[in-house]
Image (cartoon, rainbow, N blue to C red; front, side, top):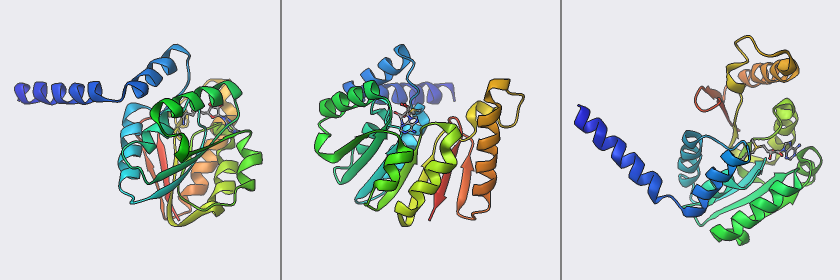
Length: 207
Ligand SMILES: C[S@@+](CC[C@H](N)C(=O)[O-])C[C@H]1O[C@@H](n2cnc3c(N)ncnc32)[C@H](O)[C@@H]1O
């Protein structure tokens, strides 16, 4: 039993070491510069979902430094990504990372507020990843839902906000917690919604 577990651990570690150098650099940069990026298990799950498509147009709200975007673009050359970021430094950092990964011709980066920019988009998407200001999730969802193809997926990260939705939370989070609870309540009315309690909580909706 222990031997099997040791072997399993060695296998997992060898897979992590195999990971692309730029991806590992992004993980290190995120820790050092306190950039919130998806957890490793969410990254693995995103990659798994995207790889199950033959070709995909993805919309991402919240590029940060391009980590989750790169994870989704890895391994499937038929994936195209439109990604929005409000912070100029992060936008530039992501640009450089997409270049290093060789993804530039598959990425459309938009610098600006998603609340302003998403309603201007004309494309239809197979997969929408919402990972930006939690207090605005309902707006991001309502603005992007019309851009989702029938059968497409909206994937929402951090929906359980470190468990604060169900526990005592610091007063400064009161508004975010209220808004996230309202959002989850709203999503529960949709029978094609599932809430998965891993990472920081993931919500998935199929159109
Ligand atoms: C959690 S981080 C995104 C992490 C990224 N998806 C990853 O896992 O690599 C959220 C990002 O959303 C950006 N953001 C917040 N509000 C935004 C808005 N209204 N429009 C666009 N970007 C926004 C923040 O600047 C931040 O970089």
